[in-house]
Amino acid sequence: MEKRQKGAIGRLLAIKGAGSVLTAFIGLIVIYVAFGIMNPKVFSVMNIQNLLRSMSKYLLIGIGQSFVMITGNIDLSIGSVVGMSAMISATLMTRGMNPFLAILLTILCGLIVGVVNGYLVGKFKLPPFIATLGTMFVARGIGYIVNGNRNTDNIASGIGKEAGDAFQNFFYYGKFAGVFNTFWIALVIFLVFFFLLAKTRTGRHIYAIGSNVDAARLSGVDVILTTTKAYLVSAFCSVVVGLILAAQAGMGNMDAGNTYEMYGVAAGVIGGVSPLGGSGILLGTFAGAGVWQILENGLNMVHAQVGIQRIVIGVIVVMAVLLDVVMRTNDKKGFKKK
Image 1 (tube, rainbow, N blue to C red):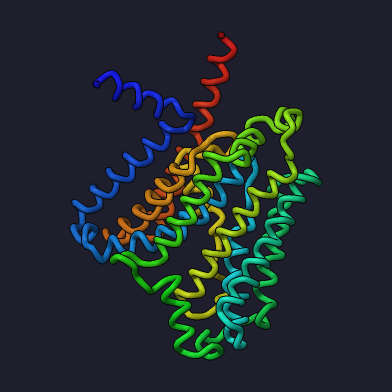
Image 2: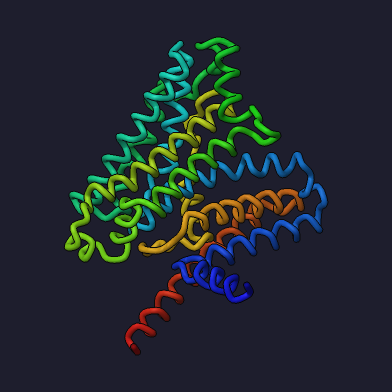
């Protein structure tokens, strides 16, 4: 029986990136307990509920950025798509459009950005930093223009209080089983994309492109289509975060989503997703988003200065990437010796 257990654990740890995921989860628990010792309010039910709700935004953008990073690329347009989505959805609703239709149109606009990113990087071979930097400015510009360079009015002013409350409760304020709906939305999306990445041909192709794009192409992988799919996942997750922010504020804010693309990178790399492509498990992104949010929440609870919070999180991100580079270098040396 003991041998079987060891065998199962061994097989689990043999999965590429599983060690980083385990480390992230252990770190998450240690950090949470440490902050709880410093301030017992960290363990309160209310704080846990708020922590899960806030973490959901980082998880969603982390999922999108992880898909892109595993292909060996990056998406700098995430934060702008978040802001654009918040502004488009809120503007449409303040002008009386049915919330369901407004959400569908917002998703469509976000997916268009994903397709553009995918084709610029996959087909036209633009460096992903440059391609998504361009769409970052375009998406943010659309967010400004859509309501005449100003934040929107309260969404209830256009669709009525009942419909406005329904929208806000669904995406942010409502609860199910004692947990805010925001977390359940993020969890469902996580499970869908976890399955897509781990169990489908598309997932295998995403890893193949990140490992060696030329070899993947010679093996019959449609690089353009697969790259576009990764960017579509990123765009979709960004749209959902935009809807969450619109529901949270009850309006569209032109600056919504600023720097969120970096939060996505942080959630991924802390959880073991390599920014160099080809490796990473989405379960690690879940842990990474948790670590990020617990750090932010815990540092606030112990009244640490904002500057200290940024320094701590920045150092952790750099160390996570440095560890990935060192591990890859060691793997290459080991391969050459063989």
